Image 1 (cartoon, rainbow, N blue to C red):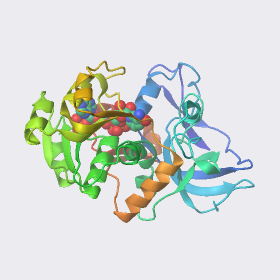
Image 2 (cartoon, protein in one colour; image 1 turned 180 degrees about the vertical axis):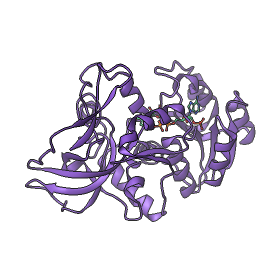
Image 3 (tube, protein in one colour; image 1 turned 30 degrees about the horizontal axis):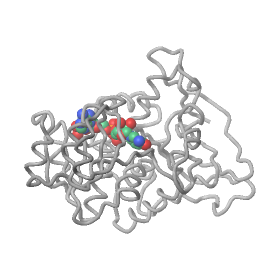
Image 4 (cartoon, rainbow, N blue to C red; image 1 turned 135 degrees about the vertical axis):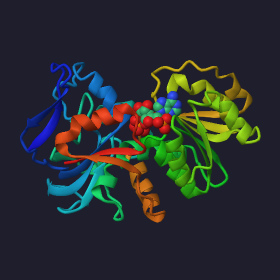
Length: 336
Ligand SMILES: NC(=O)c1ccc[n+]([C@@H]2O[C@H](COP(=O)([O-])OP(=O)(O)OC[C@H]3O[C@@H](n4cnc5c(N)ncnc54)[C@H](OP(=O)(O)O)[C@@H]3O)[C@@H](O)[C@H]2O)c1
């Protein structure tokens, strides 16, 4: 079968096409014929260290959707023909996070990912794809949507009457925006681009701030909310945004700490957190249970993911370059 592999020795060509054996499902496993896969910012970080650790030779990407093609023994409830996707950490089925689940991250150091024609996964890792979504749409869900769901809703309790700060217009951000709008929360979106802000408004964003033109966006946010701030902050930037996020949080609010878009290891001044009685919620993707609950919500609200651009399988390097350019609005997908 066809696949891509990370190659630590290929210089600029860190992604190589490969013909590899079609995997066979063992007991408790399911084989999926992948129809589409999607890219996340983390896949750029992984590509950049393709030669390090155990990444060399790994199949990348944690996001994909497809059709059950073969089942091993003891596989309930899956049948050949079912449309499915996997949680990004295929070992995190339910309950609270455990550090050991990191080893089950698809398309990372320890597990092959979704950029292949067929993938074998534990039956317990799978969720049914919502019927109203195409495979291209469903392939966008595992990492970005489940992370936004886990942080803002499962842990953050976001609901009607809340005010949510969304940073940027990438994958996690737009799912956060769509969830907020569906729940009746007010969404504040910051972006580098007026054109993207106009599109965010069309999706239901109500306060739009260009962070290039208005670097003090926290001041603008406070003004726009009459000094109240945001009850939920989707913190995607890291060191470059964290202090402003802290200055934007409302009394009793929640900073949902997810992203590293400007780097790792923010060293924020946490004093305001205490005075505002606010919380930080640290988030690492989400479980199969989160994914299934989110799919129910997507179905109930007829939410379609925002797919920016779809690339063919032979255009995978271009898809990575496009994501790295930051010109996307929503998700970048590859058909397999
Ligand atoms: N903790 C977890 O489990 C987890 C899970 C998923 C993602 N993440 C992290 O969350 C972040 C977003 O991931 P993604 O896949 O959604 O990324 P993405 O789709 O590549 O989004 C990138 C977008 O972020 C915006 N952005 C960049 N720098 C910004 C800044 N300084 N301030 C505000 N917005 C900025 C830009 O939007 P505009 O052009 O509109 O400005 C850019 O297009 C990444 O750091 C990723 O590693 C973490």
